[in-house]
Length: 547
Image (cartoon, rainbow, N blue to C red):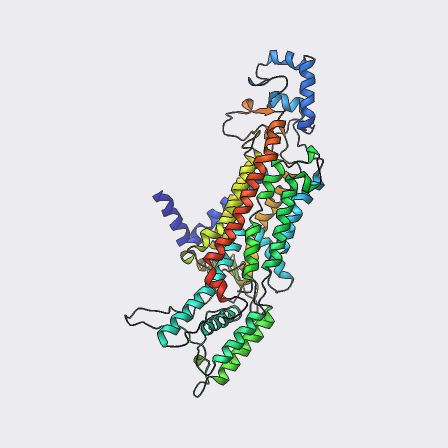
């Protein structure tokens, strides 16, 4: 265990040195997911429902029994004529070994993925033009970093509030809750526009101005939690309708939910808590309007701060420190660059840098709360563990559904595990690429953003493609139905395919699947409430009204 911690410490202390290793690991995992398919020794597609009567007919006419005498491993010892359990060879030769695509592909996709699209469409996107929709790629390719960035933003709001409170107590400045919150709101807005951390100076002469401008900024802040709650309610209702025929409007047993379509769909259930969080965070309006309001704040404070206050330094104190009676520092250094406003790209000894740098917030420099390259691992605290929780809960929910009988650990289980570790590696790569040492040698600004987008596309594309494919019948083969990848099998000759699993399916559909899915979705809501609790100071600071 000590060696593991040492390796992690080395990884995060010198990320640039380990970047090639991480990239190779990521590519290897990607190739492993794409290359893992069932056995294919015949052209006929496997259909379990059609295979069962074939086996029964062969048993009744004696054909399979005669073959069994020549090959004693045709049947499993626990098999019987009414519940045949055959080996892989017989299943592939009699039932086919090619992929058996489901006949109800359309209803499956509508039933499980239309609500997912509804959740994604309710994600809070910044008003930064069409490029903002590229955040969907980052969200699906790196949900951990997206959540971490959102929590980082909320924590920054809390830091502004706490810093203003400490200044107020140390200097005898305003102790009124409204004044402290007003200053924190203006500080947060200035950081977003100017891309650096500043602190507004309060005096009795600009008290009214600060409150008025803070109220103006808060009034344009968007918060669509209620709308998103409606989308989540529709998503949960759609899930319930899949399990309850009276709600879904279908009593056809063939339309009952199967683990093959529930498990992969639950892999995206982290969207519930992340989308709720993004709408709770909201935004401060369009960059143009916000920049205009911040400019108005600066001008008004410059003209009202009083005699001898013509310089901007009298309005914004940069790097201010104060000490209490015991000489302890009460306000830490508040001026720090959030991220490099310049964009550079260095490859093969060449350096590219745009001639002009855009003014105001951009999608790669504080303009969106879902992508914050300035966050640091050593200051992550509670934010990083909480950011992993949505994906972790979704992973165990999907794996729990797929672990149900009769297949147990199978091809889809491997895919779910690879998708989870793919998201973990994606988050590590994002952190490494955003590290200052890597930025100075590779890329920064918009070029860094484009590199991360390419990485996210390489992660999200295969995961989403395989989620859709497996829900349509991919991995519906004899090998996967028998749980071929299960470690309990030493070789393919030991694989067992149970063809009559009606009782197991009925139990799963009526009790097991609803319990696992309901628990998973409930935990996603609880994770969102935990995020609200840990970030309460920040959320309260940027609430839609002043106390």
